[in-house]
Image (cartoon, rainbow, N blue to C red; front, top):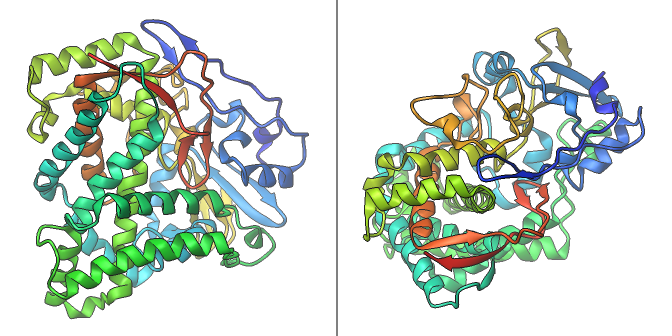
Length: 470
């Protein structure tokens, strides 16, 4: 049993100084002992709140909820076993994730498996390959530049919601990259709003799975949920159909997908499949980077010494000109800030799998169709893997230092590692640099930041900031 889930809770306090910052932490589970079902119900509102201090350790452990086996894997060696050595048995995303996203993404790469996944993986990986990222650099530079120009017209001390601002920025970047220049501000905002609405409405636990349905139960498609999906699908379908009719931007990701289908008809990328992959790329590229940048501003706001190092680096590297994608390899502090942000606040903090056949992980025997949890939120904060794991220390990613393999997996790992890793990392570093060169972004000292996990990890209620020109 996961006895650690049943111990007394411990809370980690926020500690702020000029040199050390221990950011806000989700509270540990504080329910009565011996009630795994209560943990499940609590996880429906916030998956982070069920963990205890002793879960932040290298181990594998298990619990049963209504007869369903749930296995927590928090050891780099055993994570490698799951995601690499025996990935064919553990490749399936959990029924919770598949059911939560299938209405929105269909058979898109993120939740597909088997032959569909193998075909689409090679296709999408090629479209967003690291060698293609420089081609999208001007889009990132221009869109981030538009944001700072808009901010520069606001009075000093203007209060904004960082999550909303970063979501708008990354939505426009990914819209221009995926769809070319056709989407427009209204449609980009509509797509952003639809994803936000969908995430707030969806049930990511799926009680049917724990009641004995190995594939989970279909999500109840409420009128609000249907409106969000219809709005999103309508926008994406229009763009895909325009491309098929020859009215597309020849440099967009959708156009690259269409060209590949024309060369390889066996891929069977019809309009629905193209929409599913476009929606998948959009969701992954927009939501995760927006969350990362939002958390980065929170961390920098509370760590003035690190913020000064970032500003000094930008002054040395760029002077008065705006940062470009060619500067990214030289921005060591900016890169370290983003990587440390991804460690503390991985945008997808739970990687859940479902095994096809019986197996063994460590000393735990696994029944077929069990829920296997790899939790970057826990892994990245495990003391045996990271010194002072709850503290914001970008230096741990500098001077050639790298974490132990499979101890740092913000983009997942193994064959199912995020194909857009290089695109997202480059985008986050460049956007941080463009904005930090022109502004100090401050979170009010009195504001209590609370991490909340639904499908992705966001600050509950957004993040209020004030912007101060440098």
